[in-house]
Image (cartoon, rainbow, N blue to C red; front, side):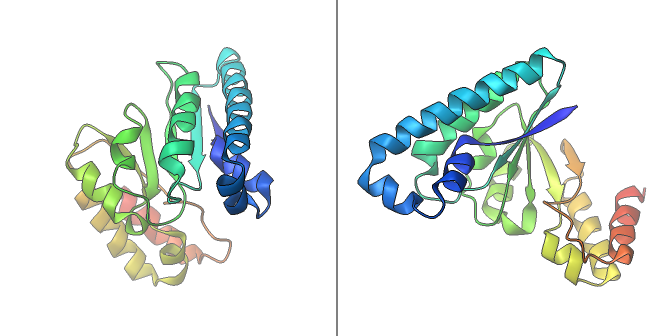
Length: 194
């Protein structure tokens, strides 16, 4: 079993309710203190999950494209992954588009999960590191708004691109409720085709 966890910066941005931009510039020391508290509590929660038998975490990184993520978010997200333990099965989900290439190697030992067409720089960097685990698939919009034939072809293209590496094929993020059943069937058909 893998437990979904939102990284501390995701939590802080959500709790800030629109004042994050102002606070990182006007009271950065308070932002860092708040992130430290959120990180400590999140780490303790992950350790509790680990102690009761959870096998790892699915760490959702929502704000990785923000310029301050490297300084304020990355180390705290890594603390969350480490808290799951050395033998954990951890997935780090890069939510959204435009994550910088350094995300590909920042979470070594974890499975990096994303929508590949939304994060080409991450995919390009990961291609230079065939030992990295990747997971993901089509962007929610592509899965929902394409024809079944386009979904099948795009899924086959992902499989082909990932043929010689450790890879888990799945949704690149969420599956929108309005996604046609035929598109999901096409995705699964391409995934299962030998």
